[in-house]
Length: 319
Ligand code: 13P
Ligand code: SF4
Image 1 (cartoon, rainbow, N blue to C red):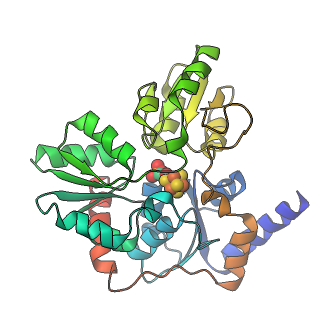
Image 2 (cartoon, rainbow, N blue to C red; image 1 turned 90 degrees about the vertical axis):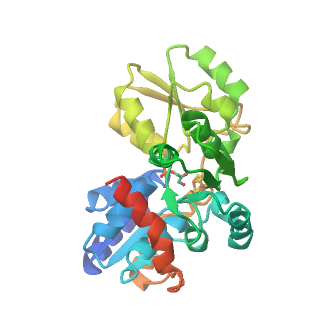
């Protein structure tokens, strides 16, 4: 604890000295979430992280999250310095969607509007017509369908199929998955529901369809927070990264939150539903990059104008 206190003091001092701001995702360690809020930064989902980074006056952003979040910040503000605690913090959706294969997939479907999830590389974004995150995907696809457009969706197949079921849009999918949400198990979730019959089930739509089918509320990180606050219940079972538990518990004192079962955590493991790449963010890493200026995110300048287009569309749609 003494070391954590010292590191937090050091980060507070360095943020001021360097005129920098800390932006943290809901899935990173509670210390990094609290510090971001306390120092005038932000803890939020990937959509609001992008908007905040674009609009904040600070010339240096420290992004606690995964690489695509840092890249999105850089694409929106190429003149700013974007630092990340660990440049190897990636995402299975990004890794599973290499640009060459993705471009060939787009070429094979020239009649479709290309909608990609934020969890992708800058090069993949540069092939897209629209960017979406889980908090706005449904509304954007619904609007495109109303205009008569057919959709090519990448990379998360579970989220894509959930949106297809909800909107009835004509969609073809890339075969990607989030290694965290893909692991939630419907059978074990049924059992947990029986143990806690009063509990409402909150599910992120990157989870398999059988798990989504058991939900009382389905949605992005922000939607899950909203549901926990507004649904008439005192107990919840939550199928998303367990980094969310911190915010859920601090915003809802007195309510009880259980982690939904994954293959690993049903009997023994208490923290299986946690992204290994989000877990690479640490107080020590933030202090180190602020002090040294190392780990700056770079995006190929030739890609930036084209990659920015779908991001700008999303931010304008959700403004
Ligand atoms: P949000 O877009 O809701 O932040 O979450 C997506 C995700 O899995 C981030 O890694
Ligand atoms: Fe990617 Fe899933 Fe980790 Fe989010 S939680 S960064 S979608 S692997």
